[in-house]
Length: 413
Ligand SMILES: [Zn+2]
Image (cartoon, rainbow, N blue to C red):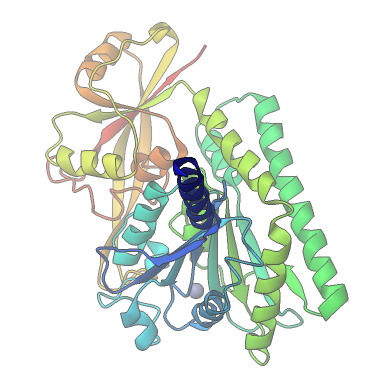
């Protein structure tokens, strides 16, 4: 008898455990940015996709369509091959007022480096809390002739090559070629998928192009670029056909998610390869330890999970090159695109090489040492034009706008 009861309990237990295990979860994420709405769809997958809807409040289409997909349960059923972190409403204020700008006049999609907006901070937090494999950034753009929809990838090589060129750095060609091969195969796969969509539904999808205007799209601060600089593959979507925009966007999104399961692994492989590119650099940023606002710097490094050291012994210092930066000219700009009312300092700099080798160890002793990463380059390097100095986040009161508290150390093997 006791044996039978025991067996019964075990069966009941197995039943409940299997029930729990089969369950998918959709829940609202608690966040301190109470103006936003974020969902988490958990499908017990190894892949995590972040979907950023309508970051521009005057482009509310993706918010509407992704809401509809959520209501219909597509993410737990048809597209259950991944988990989804869905920023459905990055800001209720902007969506309600159909505004591209925040209450403070800031375009959140121009401030990922500087983190001046709440919405960009929210994304940064989600990127740090979840191991994201792919970011989808969903927008609407102006009408284009003979195109219904546009897409664009944030590719790491573009930004890395920019850095290598800036400093004349000769780099391991095999690694670089492997990186570019990844990017080409992602592109080829996407092209095939969208060609198929054209054959089946007559929807014309094209790679992103700019209409008579070169705006902020080359800037690292937009999410497509910021994501990949942080080693996460990104795709930007823009609905451009205005007449049939609901129908077209619905079709493209559905078709995209239906096919993504076949090549999501490619993004994951690409993502795990990108850090390899930074591992072989023997380049460091030396930041003056006595700089007035060192606390601000350290909090930004921590926020972005960038490692730093106070003291380091380096090999081959005799083969090192140390460059310091001086400011030739400062151009102060207000009302730069997406930064209404904020001050942006554009520096004209000149680089000098410190030739006295004995000075190098002296600088090393008095610096916060930050190993190279592309993100560091964007945050700290005066050549990047989007550094924390440009946005006045790292003020230069002590340096009186003449020199910069950062140096770059390159060690040749
Ligand atoms: Zn937009």
